[in-house]
Length: 374
Image (cartoon, rainbow, N blue to C red; front, side):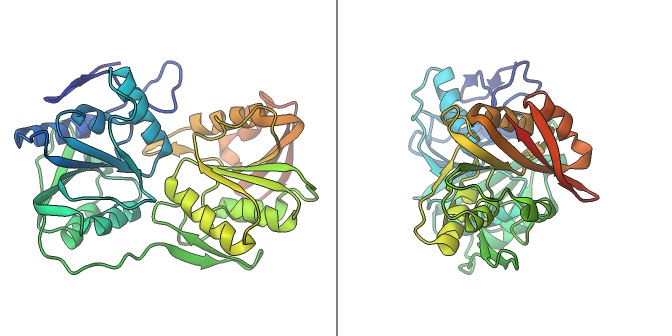
C-alpha cells in the first residue's frame, strides 16, 4: 500500500476493519488536499485544529505533534483506526485526544478540517455544535472527493459558519472553505422522533442514525418474525441502530438479557435513550464496538441483525460477512442468528458456509428473514 506523504508526515496507514489483501487504501486525495491546504497556512504547534470524520485517522495522525489536534467523529472503527495508525507510525495510541460525536466538544478551535460525511444530517449537527467552539479568525475547511460532494454541503457551511468558497478540484478532490461570521444561534433539528404502532413505542434518532425519519423497510419486515419464547436467553442486537429490534424483542421476552452493539456512537446514544424510554431500568448492555469482536466466544443464544451493505461510500458484503463470522463465534452450539436482507444479496448461500442449518423464516417481495443455527 502507498504511504500518505504530506508536508506534516509520511505515514503507513491501514483501514478498519482489516482484511487480507485489502484492495482499498486508508486515505485519498481529499485527505492530501486538506493537509496541503493547512500546511500552506504555516500553523504552529499551538494552533488548535479539530478534525471531524477522519475515516481512518489519516488527518489526525499526520498532524499529531505538529499542531494541537483533536479528533471527533461518529465511527468507533474510525477511532480504532486512529489508535492503530498512531502506534503503527511510532506514536502513542492515545497521542491524539478523541471525542465521540455523541459528546460535546471543548474549543476554541483555530482551524476545523472536515471530511464531508455520507449523512448530511451529521454534518449539519456538527456545524451547529461548532458555532460557539470557534476562535476569532477561525476557518472551517471541508474536503471530499468531487463525486461524493453534494451541493448542500456548501449551503450548510454558509448557513451555520459564514461565507464559503469552493476550491479548484485537485486529483478529483475539492475543498469548501468557510470563514467565521456572525450567524444566528441555531437550534438543532436533531434528534428526530417517530412512533410505531406495533410495538407501541416512540423512537428517538440522533443525527447519524440510519433511517432517522422513519423505520427502514427491512426492519419493518423483520419485526413480526422476531424469535419468541426466549426465556432467559442471552440476546445480542448486532448493528443495533436506534435499538428497535432489541427493544421489540425485549418487550416480548421479559426474562431475556440483551446486549446492543453498534459502531456509530450516535446509534448507541439513541439506543440507550430509547431503551430507557421503553423499558425503564431493565438491565442491558449497550456499547459502541467493532461488531461482536469483543464478545466472549459461546456467550450468546441469539443474535439479531439487519446487516449493512456499505462502509461509508464503499458498497459490498465484507462487513455483513464479518458480522456473520462474529455471530457464529459468539453463539453457543445450537444458538441462532436471525437476519433480514435484500433477496438479491444472496445471504442464504453465505450463511450455509458458516452454519449447520439455514432456513427461511419469512419473505416479502424484497426481503428474506433467515435463521442460521450453529
